[in-house]
Structure formats: structure tokens, C-alpha cells
Image 1 (cartoon, helix red, strand yellow):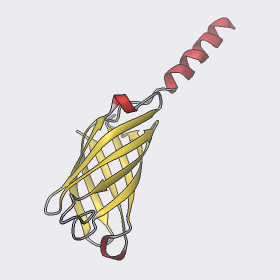
Image 2 (image 1 turned 90 degrees about the vertical axis):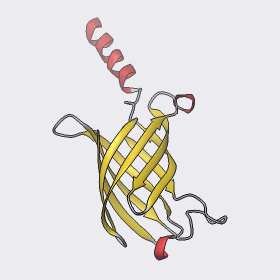
Image 3 (image 1 turned 90 degrees about the horizontal axis):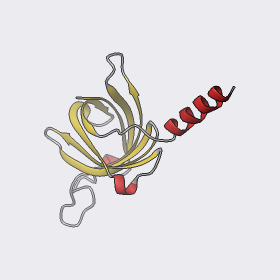
Image 4 (image 1 turned 120 degrees about the vertical axis):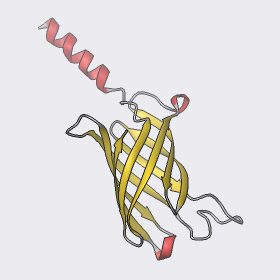
Length: 139
């Protein structure tokens, strides 16, 4: 019985720490206003702002013909909230189009064992409001 208690405590301790979600991800998306697109997400762990299952990341999304969205992500285990925005132009948040938003993602391993995530996002100021979905796989 002692071995079981020891095994259980090891499992609980191991599950208290999040998997590092850092990396470069190839993405395909579907935006309610803009349609289908491809992009590249880069996430980098900020260990000085992370503890246990709670992790902080720098977040960047590059979309050809649209730009580079900068932001950050806050994760708990395999779930993350992501904030992103086009650079400020003339003091306008999200650029002249107000292209900024927040997404929520769930990470998991795909059938090939690659880390992947599905993100739903909301952009309150872009074209009167907008949503979309991205599917991303770590390279």
C-alpha cells in the first residue's frame, strides 16, 4: 500500500506542472469576415512569470498580407488565453482597422504525437465585431 501512496503522490506532483507550450506552430484559420487564411504562431515561455501549472508566454501571430500580431498568453495546464493586436498606428490600438482580440485555446497531442491547439478568438473592434477559429500544429 505504501508503494501506491508514493506513486499517487508522484503523479499529483508531476501533474501540478504544465507542459512547456513554447514553439513555432503552423496554423490554418477561418475568420468570419476575412475567410480562410494561414499563419505562423510563435510562443515563448516567460519563466520569471510562471509557476507550476500556470505559465506566461510572449505570443506572436504572423499572417501573410495582414501583418504581425503581437501579444501574450496566460496558460493553465493545457488551456490558454491569448491576446493579440496589430501594432499601434497613429495612437490607434490595433492599427487603423482596430484589429485586435482575445482567444482561448486547448492544447493536445495530435495523432502524430505533435503538440497542437485549437483557438477560438473574438475581435470586438474589427469591422463591427468578429470571430474566428485557428487550428495550429507545432513544427
